Amino acid sequence: MGALISYEVTRYIGRHSSRLPVCLFVSAQPAPNTGWNGLGTHNYSDELLAKEMERLAGTPSEILGEAGALAVFLRTFRADLQLLESYTYAPDLQLRCPIVVFGGNCDPTVGVADLAEWRSFTTDRFALHTFHGGHFYLRDCLPTILEIIIENIKSTTLAQGLPMSR
Image (tube, rainbow, N blue to C red; front, side):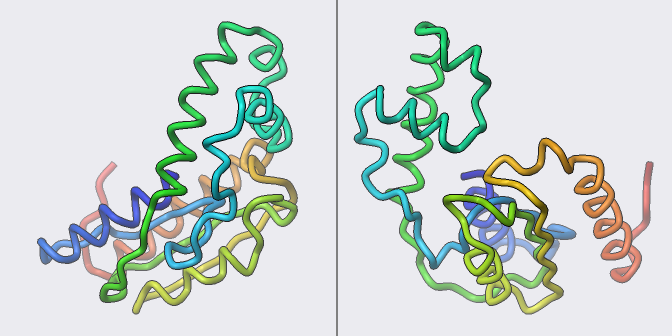
């Protein structure tokens, strides 16, 4: 869901400011025009929704096994799903900043083709990085992902002639 929020904020900035973000980084989310393939999931019973959380392998077993903690996570997960499922893409101009996309090559909810679709949302540079894993692939790849993010920020900042600060 963070990818769609970041995309919409970047679109807003592009319409209302001459100063654009250095780069848009998104992870494990289909392109905005693709839609979410879990329609209706937010209406699942708590039991089915907990099974969906387990299937995605992003929730620690300690939380799945503790009713109080699970109830808190289910409310948040359900709200996130409802936002994703109600999102409606409105066509607009392409972004004028680079887009870098990350994803897992075995993600049960977002295919590599869904990730590649982000290419059509920028007039600037596009990069797609896939890693072995599912929807929460980044747990095992975080150092590599951070290196890619830092390198992209550096190269884009230098290409734009912007000062680098520490």
